Length: 233
Image (cartoon, rainbow, N blue to C red; front, side, top):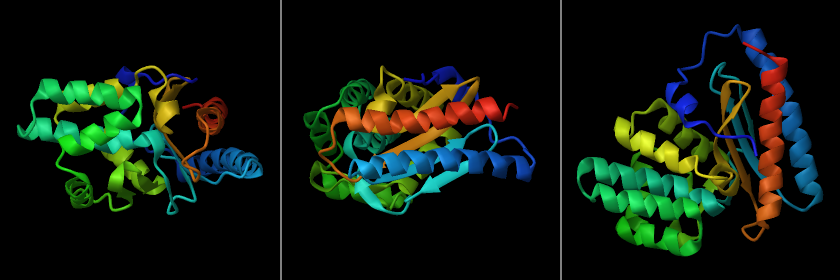
């Protein structure tokens, strides 16, 4: 698993003013690798929704990004975001929020259902997400459906920092970097060759095995590594 590096995600600035042809060439190269990964997944009867962003250059690739797919363990990301926003507003105790978020990224449906209850139920959670502009994410009944584009927009916002206090943003990024959280969730930030990429890989089948999900995520992460090698800053 290519590692997520918290310090780099915190310090990575907005995309540099990379000449457009270079950015487009990098996007094309990543896109070819992503298309190959999607074709391999299709052979296993899986459909993928993918977003990849090079945070250094702004190169961006989206495939099936508007298709609503099973959110799976990536439900932890919007729930953790709302938990920390509640802590920032004083609606929930910070210690309780931190403990809840740790359980979310440790995995398991019970943690997600407990967090939804903690936040006032699915209607309240979905309303809060819609209020933040994330209309493509629906956590009704704890099942979780989303578009890769909506999850990518949420990662954009987490990286940019406007939705959380500095302390909460740091804590959320730390939770997302625990172990193989990004690979398990299918969404997060990966660091390769001194660059940080935002990666979202959603799978259509909610019952796809963890191995299949990890394989799909690893293929996209490898595409990021290849792009960083081929297009150095």
